[in-house]
Structure formats: structure tokens, C-alpha cells
Length: 315
Ligand code: ZN
Image (cartoon, rainbow, N blue to C red):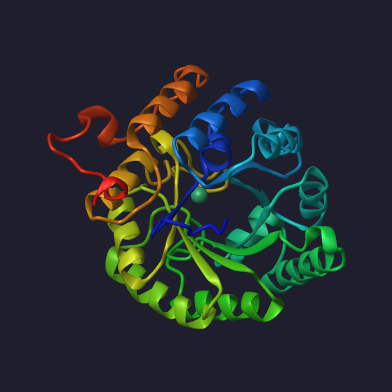
């Protein structure tokens, strides 16, 4: 099975990581797994299940190794995790993670605050992770993603020059990344910028997969996701119910809402392989365990429009 069998766009659900880490909710491992299973049943082929950061920084993610192991047993989807450094990657690999999303901020100031490293130091760490996965045949199928946070702006440094994003993308490609992840962590980007930046990033990445990650901080999340799609991106991150943010970016609100994103794509005739009714059921499973934490999304409120034909079912 490849990621793209019978679908046009791969939606990468990041709620159990990005969503949950921004809340104060300490969800049990069983509750996380019920949520992950419900998302998988809805047709998601890649789910980010946790983050291998020190538990004292993010107690919500303390059980990430257990969640990773159990998620792998469910089968049928790629188990993706976030790793901030080499140590995190070692722990994630030991737990059986299938995609490591390494993260560095395009804003060096943000990177220093987030992981206490310069770009050079982060890239050194990334190279060590590539070496580690290449040193053992049992990791040969593991995807190592070079992620760039704050690509359009940052609460510390303000706007980020596209050149910085391109330079760091080139550095990831040269280091041997299997995937590039470009994130607008705090909702600074607009659709025109997004289209321009992703066009160039896709050129630099050539045949390496490029994923786009948007936050809806200022209401442009879906418009930016569409702009990235127009530029040629075929992997988009979303978060069920728009849960999420960034603990290092004060005021940041949730990711693009997965169900709204899927509705947008399917209504344009773009196949995601995802069943919207089942996605709404997964949302109910998630909300049961959120202790009243707010969720977002227009599709869940308004429901399916009369006569709607998802792309996956079109003749
Ligand atoms: Zn994010």
C-alpha cells in the first residue's frame, strides 16, 4: 500500500499531537486510542499520534511511546510522531513509529526558544537522525520528515523571509529528508504567499513529498490549504474539530479543521478516501474526552448539503 493509492490528497490528522498538546487536558492512553481508532475507521491513512518531547514540558504527551505501540497494532494507517531532537527520534524508533516529523523553526529566534538550538545545531541533529535510520535495516521503511515551523511568521521575529524557508528546505533535501513539512504555526500566511512559497518549495524538493500544515489563527487556514493544493501540494495536515495550537506561540489557535478540509476537497472532486459521516462520529468520540475544551468547525455545525456527492463516490 502506498500513501496515495486511490486518493488524490493525503490528509494527515495531527489532532492527537498538535491538538492535544495545546490543551490542559490529560487524556488517558485508552481515550487517545479510541479517538485514533475512530479517525482511522473514517479513512485517515496517516495519523500523528504523539510527540517525543520531555514529559515535564508536555505532560499530555508523556504516554507517546505507549500510544505509538498500540496505534501500530491497530494497523492500516501510517503512525506518525513529532520528534524535536535525536533523543526523541531514538525513543520514537524504539516504540515503532513509522514517520518521524523532526521540527525546526524557520525563525531562528523561535527555534532557540523552542528547542534551544540554532539552525545549524538543529540540522546536525537531523543528520544524526538520518544516519540512525540508515544504520539499521529495520528502519528502512521509516519516513524521516524535515519539518519547518513558523514559515510565514513568528510571534518573536515577525515575518519570515521566503529565502530562509528555501535555504532550510535545501538543507533538509541535502541531508537526505524523505519528506518536507512546511508549517504556518501561528497563522501569519496569506493564500498568495502560500502559493508562491509552496511552488518554490516543491521545485526544491523535486520528487520528495511535501506536506503543508496550517493554523486557522486568523481565519485563513482553509484558504491557505487551497492555495497549497493549487501550488501542487498533495498532503495536507488537519485536526479534527480544529483543536490545537502551539505551546510556544501564545495566542495561537487550532489547526485547519479536518472535516472542513475534507469537505472542501471532496466537494471539488478531490478524493481523500475519507468518509465525512464517520469523521463526525470520530469527532464525538474525541469530544467525550476533552473535558469541555472548545472545538471548532463549520461542517460539523451545518452538516451535509442536500445532494452532496463526495468525490470518492463519484462515477
Ligand atoms: Zn501546528
